[in-house]
Amino acid sequence: MEITGPFLDRTKKRNKQPACWFLRFSTPKLNPDGTAVLQGAGKTVRQRHRPYYESKAKAAADIPSIREQHEQTGSGQFLFDRQAAADYESARKMVGGVPLIEVAKFWRLHHPDKPKRKLAELFQAFLADVKVRHGEGRHWSDLKSRGGIFITAGFGGRYAETVTRQEVLAYVKELPAAAPRTKRNHKTVICEFFNWLVQEVHEIAANPAAGIKKRMLPKETKKEIEFLPLDYVTRYLRAAERYAPELVAHEVVQLVAGVRADDEMAEFEVGFVFPQTKEVVIPASVAKTEKREVIDGLEENFWGWWSAYAPKEGRLRPKNYGPRWDRVRVLAALADQTKADELARLPIKHLLRLPEAKAALRQWPWNARRRTFCTYHVAKHQSAAKTALIMRHRGSAYTLHNSYRGLGVTQEKGDEYFGIMPAPVASPILPSIVPRGIVRLQRGDPAATG
Image 1 (cartoon, rainbow, N blue to C red):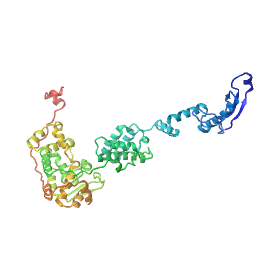
Image 2: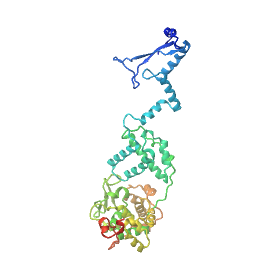
Image 3: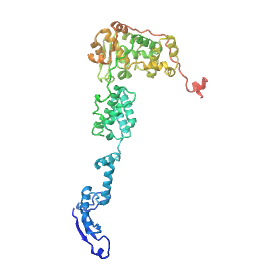
Image 4: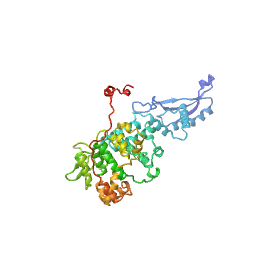
């Protein structure tokens, strides 16, 4: 940049004006958006400047300041007059030591040129994609539940780039009333969501949750495997026969054949069971492994139960399975048969509101039926490999001992477990039906008009 002068303006001096010394220099002429004005040949249009000063000394002293302003504000593409320099200095003071380029990036992130989706909207797109690929199974439900908690915890209104590893780690560690294993499960869901943002939609370049290791989370204490006691299993099956025979086949397939509850029973059909060849075939579309699997070598009492309670066709799981299953578990927990029969006549929703109902449901172990099958089957046959084959772990005895087999069951109890046979009830006790709508009005129920 060339600056000439100082020069004396003799006309102004004769007129006794106070500022009669001046400098000469030129800068690129700018458009309103800050870009340089170009001529037809692409040459930058120059704009001449002639600042005036009260003395020759002051004019000469300002030359370094003008050059410094030009260097700070860049080349001729940007305005670099005194006002621009003042704005620059004010901005630097406001942001402290943060480089202005980082400030500009942050501003652009929150004021994008094009519409940009926040995490709440992206999470809904993620769930929709998982649903298309895998359906609304247990995996999808876990993603929706745990990921939804993350979104509603204050992250939904943010952009993906703004979430840091430290924030995700702090969120997971501070989850209220969550066991260490549960916290790790939450972290896994968050990690899967951000992986999708990186790999599938290219929303961000790196996953902020990917670097969170197990050692960085609360230590997990291995719990003893819980299963159903033998006397309760007997009471539970008898309760199903007495109060809900339509559930018996569904429960026996899990308690006596070890089929997975969460991943396979929702779509388990009568046609999967072949009494002629003594086999149960889980098709690839239903099996957790997504491969066709065959179960054979089942105990004789399974075929006795199946012969007595299997429906003719269709799925084993009846409509409104959840409340019906809760009802049977509550009634099975009652040692007093008379009281159980009395409560069995209540409408299901009324029964489940009772304190004893809530207590009974809390005592039901996680994955109870498959763990119970494993525990008693290993006890009876004294062979984890045989049990692993039926459970489709392909001989992985370690998996059984680590995740499914409970302790303290003798071989005699195993024999007794697989000796439980059906005892059908002539007249099952069903819950009373609460009349609704016009029927309720016709019966004169005062609650219907209130």
